[in-house]
Length: 160
Image (cartoon, rainbow, N blue to C red):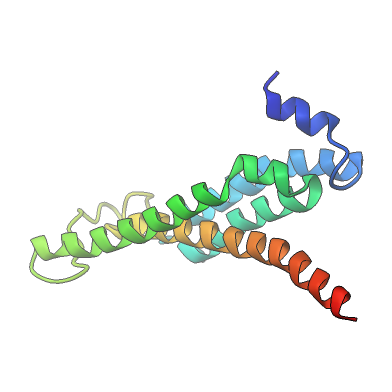
């Protein structure tokens, strides 16, 4: 058994064992659904932003159920920063690769057949890049608010 799995089972921080069990079960479903929304965003409603929000919500409920320390071991603040910057860089690179055909964001990949997974050209790649950026950004915002919220509320209590 991995150290983090052992720590999750024995951890006293976070919520009750029932909530932790449900979150452990739901995390796989949430990640799978978020990936589905990202990958099929050019065929169905959804895409990079919606899928990224769903994936970020998975990390947020992990934080709420198990506590900040365990969630940061799954996706650290430095890992979120790397993921955020990688998503932005990938999006810009995709746009610049359009210049190979003459102008910014030109679809340089074959369109394929309609209503199939590989029919969107560069759109699925853009969705993946946006999902990385949105997931990392929203999780980082949540962690920052959780950390600084306690800090700020502590300052307010000291002043009173």
